[in-house]
Image 1 (cartoon, rainbow, N blue to C red):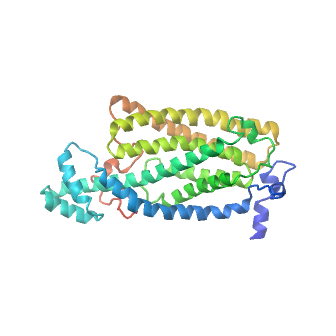
Image 2: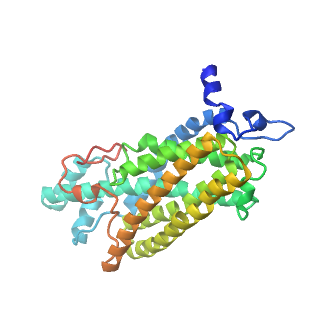
Image 3: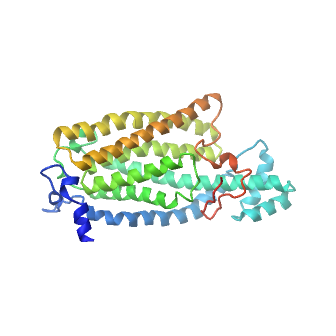
Length: 355
């Protein structure tokens, strides 16, 4: 194991010529990021995954039921009757039977409404968890960057490298950011399946690689800029979806417009012309490139391709908004198919295939 570690973390690949991992050894009371710290990353990921279960069970699901989160199909009174029956149980078959006997509504319609209710609650709980984490990570990142010298002067992300001191707050930001994507990979097969599932999977893997390797090579300054920049649009998207799932459509439409503007500004302007520019152009002006510099920037450019693809999807939704209010998440595969599909998501957190 030690031989593999020495081979993998070799100086010529990860550092510019003239620098080695020895330059980031802790000395004289100064702490630097080290590859060995990454062993804690999976533990943070497991911790977030374990935290998600009680949050959804005891906070998000009751909140979703209290909001009567039932997709309207034009018959609010009927939906409300079955919703009240369904809210009393997490057992879908029992909810169908109770709804049929208690309301006198035909069984097929009862099953349809119960399925819609269950999927709506599942989406609400998943989205509320992501919204909570995005908001926390964005706020945490802004608090750190507000005390840094490299927020307004991006050159400070490069000057003096690799001897950039690791703040304790920056360490926890990296661990929590990496843990977030690891926890998403743990649940990506059971969360609500969406049309951009493949793009999400690629994004999560790329994000984990960038977070891990930028930390191991002590590129934490530019890494903190990248991570916090991504959080602001993600946070607004989750808020928009929460409002939509809670049937506050007017507020959701307003928040969606705000999200579109922020996404286009941060992902298609700030990210390529400031963060990537610093990582590629400014870096090469001060420090000699190395193989990791080429690979890391290749992954970062790949993320920009995903940003463009997502921007296309978002703009399509924005144009639809001109014709009428936003009624659904266009990225979801279960929005329409839920009515007739024989196998559906279940409230215990496991999602069966809806194809």
